[in-house]
Length: 247
Ligand code: 13P
Image 1 (tube, helix red, strand yellow):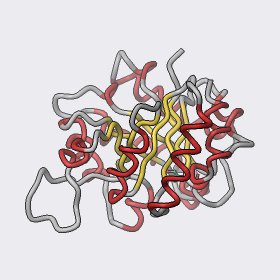
Image 2 (image 1 turned 90 degrees about the vertical axis):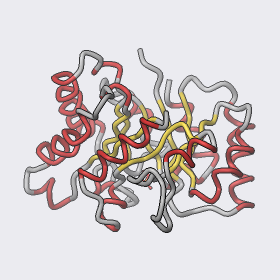
Image 3 (image 1 turned 120 degrees about the vertical axis):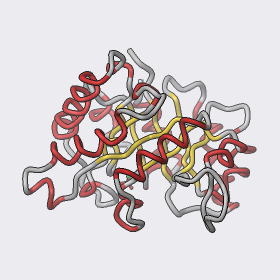
């Protein structure tokens, strides 16, 4: 079975002092985890967390990457800059980027391509809003979002990680049931299988109010290969329990 990935997405949270306490607690409490573990930290803290995590099983991730290579793009971080800090993964197309920063499927595809070109694994986020779910559009929405990245120039989709994050479950305490999540993951897996012989090896993460209490059940689903954890990744005890649940 493939190794699961538990990725914490700190979003716009943290401080030098809080990050240090959190990463030290994770290092001390984690032992040798059975899964891969990553922390997606705000860009200003990449250097700090790189140093704190050095020599541990914690991999570094970023929350976004510019669609441009370099130049006059004030406020942006390039994939090469992320690479300078040994960033292994980058979130691309998180629903908060799509919703508040106008990111389209086209932007998401270009960003994924930039990450891959720099040797960074994109974690491409897909997911429907509550209105879309209620209108019966869940499958169409996630299939459209995944289709945008399925044929990247010169790269195989098996180099990408996909995260299914139903927007209505993010930060709401409303988790998709394991069955609801598995249903969508199966759709994504089938779409990947139609495009790549390596579909079974592509990691599909679930995100949206994953916590210490519900992680084990979600992670037990056949097509759920890890978690993308927001709020619960800010609390060492909770995040450690999620890591322990990912066997
Ligand atoms: P929560 O775990 O806080 O719902 O956030 C999920 C998420 O958006 C992770 O990227």
